[in-house]
Image 1 (tube, helix red, strand yellow):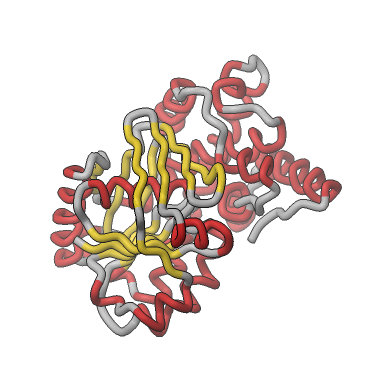
Image 2 (tube, rainbow, N blue to C red; image 1 turned 135 degrees about the horizontal axis):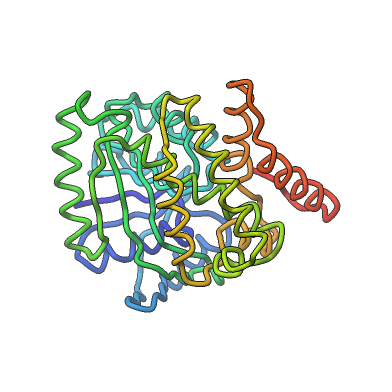
Amino acid sequence: MRFLIVGAGGIGAYYGARLLNAGHEVVFVARGDHLDALRTKGLCVKHPDFNFEGRVKAVDQMELVDTLAVDSFDLVIVTIKAGATEDVMTFLHPWLCIANTPVLSLQNGVDNEITIASQVGSERTVGGLAVRIGGHIIRPGVIEATGAAQVVMGVWRRASDHPRLQQELARIAACFNAASIPTTLSEDIQRALWRKLLINNGVNPLSALTGLDTRALTAHPVLTRSVYRLMQETALAATADGVRLQAADIDEMYRLICQFDAIKTSMLVDREKGNPLELDAISGAVVNRCRKLGQEATLTELVQALLESRLAAEGACISL
């Protein structure tokens, strides 16, 4: 199969390397020094269970729309930061609309699929989660990744609405699994995305604020209770989207994060590198939806405000 990966960062490059290693064609969209390195030196991916080093095809957005046809790809995989989704999808809209290639989001947050569907239609939109993976650019052209690196994906919003796309996803999932990307299909991907946000809002902003990894956060006698409370506020926010998360969902995700290795969250890594943080996509999604419900996400708001204040004092970027 032939895949386009829009965003050749830690997550996109890892999955792309797995697909390349399995004999599929992959084109990466990147920018800046990372793009230059991919073009001249190739891609290097380091994972405890997998290493890849080789030449790859990498383009920028303009070269993509000028030289490649969307219908030459079986799947477009979006792995950019959530804050860039609207701008990138708006730019790619005329190019994407030429054909019916499905678009899969493997991003943080619960709003990316809404943005993608507004550009290409729900019949081409695939929601997805990259589960138990940490991946980062350690220098241009070189990626370091850890974790089981699973994928969960499903038709946006319900599989029953688009049976043809569901059939296509079954073929893609089989391809991913054969490429050593453990993949499952979800009949309710919106709910799965909110379940992941339980973890993301529970640890991402707090880790960026404190500088602690997931193990240190959940082992701390006070902060671990804050993680759980942040997850409870996320479950409340989900009801604004018609998603009902029970106490059992919170407990399951809390136990999962407590079992994680000592992983630096993506937001902590971004802060250390001086990159924009996905605050709007994670804590912002919780705060805004709770406000719509006439409720307060008190702790989420506090962590977000403290982190924004610290970033402002440092002159750092809050979001894309």
